[in-house]
Length: 320
Ligand SMILES: [Zn+2]
Image 1 (cartoon, rainbow, N blue to C red):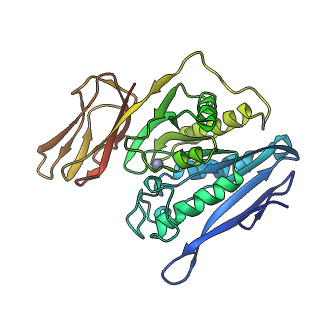
Image 2 (cartoon, rainbow, N blue to C red):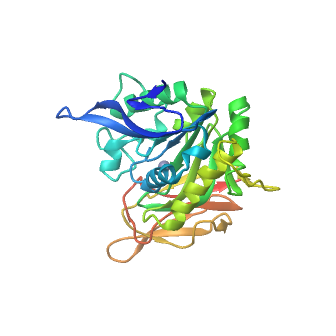
Image 3 (cartoon, rainbow, N blue to C red):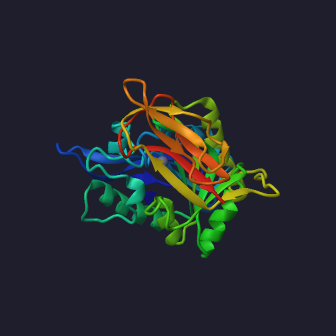
């Protein structure tokens, strides 16, 4: 019988288990909860991963609910759900890990001799690479930002990249970010799963506060991907064309204060258009965040009056 961590993969059943990835200062093991569903018929193994960024809990909830609601009798192949890939970060409601200050999704392939996040990246890459045929990594704007619904895949020219694009086009969104290797997303898990030959996509939806609509979009994107892979019945939606962005700029606050957004996510910006400003505690504008691109797609922006400090991610703008 196949096993992942302590979870047995039993045809026709859903099972649970965990993978131990280290221990806390007091020796408490750090465990990744796993939920599996295996069809009676053969098919691909798809990993669903959430909370690589600990404050992006919409994906975690959607993985749990999706597997709960799934009719395993209809399934071909295997689903491995990992709702919370980064427990220390999840416990701290934080994008970075409280253990080492590291953003897990920038340090793949990790290091088995590094700090906790690097070891975690290494274990995730090893475990997923050994067992997955496809990876769907669920993200959002976290508690400080929000994003529209779109799918990301890593640019390149391998079979895994082509298959990632094929999957991205069948997940129900018309907005796709074809991420290049030299931008602000170096070191993501999906980059490295793809480099290891496993087609991988990142789904982005909403932020905190999570809504039922966010959950619906996350679950629908998973369902459509499984339809495309012929693991569940039905036809995945395929559109005639997609809006594909290839260039991205991540924008960070330079000043401390409160962020005042000037426009909604999804807005198409001209170069220099105001995205938002930082207001200090006397009510004065101390910084303006403006679009770096013409035809810039506002892919993430800070929530109203979100407290900032220098270096805090406050907006993302993509362009073709
Ligand atoms: Zn994220």
